[in-house]
Structure formats: structure tokens, C-alpha cells
Length: 64
Image (cartoon, rainbow, N blue to C red; front, side):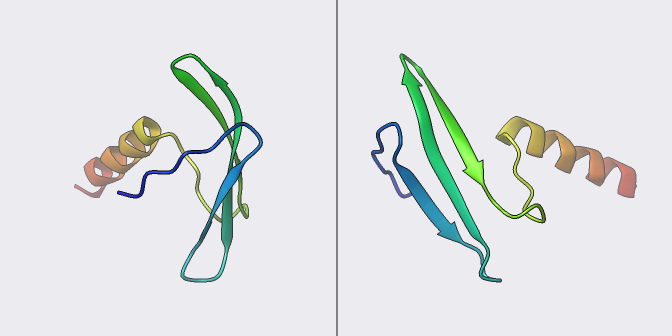
């Protein structure tokens, strides 16, 4: 796991194998919560982890 320290207004950038860029910007840090903004092509699915896991579990169930 890569651990980074960022301040509000700072970002990190990731590049997919197809060359698409995903930029995650720290919007606000308030106590125990951090607000993030994600900039990515519409083709890139962006979900909170719990939503992603729920979607994945639903697909596995529907496959039978």
C-alpha cells in the first residue's frame, strides 16, 4: 500500500493501462472526514468501496 500525505487543494494522479488519467483532489479535511473530488473519463467507474462491493456481490448472485 502506498501512503501519501496531501493537503486541501493537492491531488494525486493515476494512469490506467489504457492511458486514462484519474485525478483525486483533496477538497476538505474536517476532523475524521476527508472530502475528495475525482476527475476521470465517464468510462471509468468510480464508486465508494461499499457500493463497489455491493455491486460486485449482486453480479455474482445474478450469474447463478
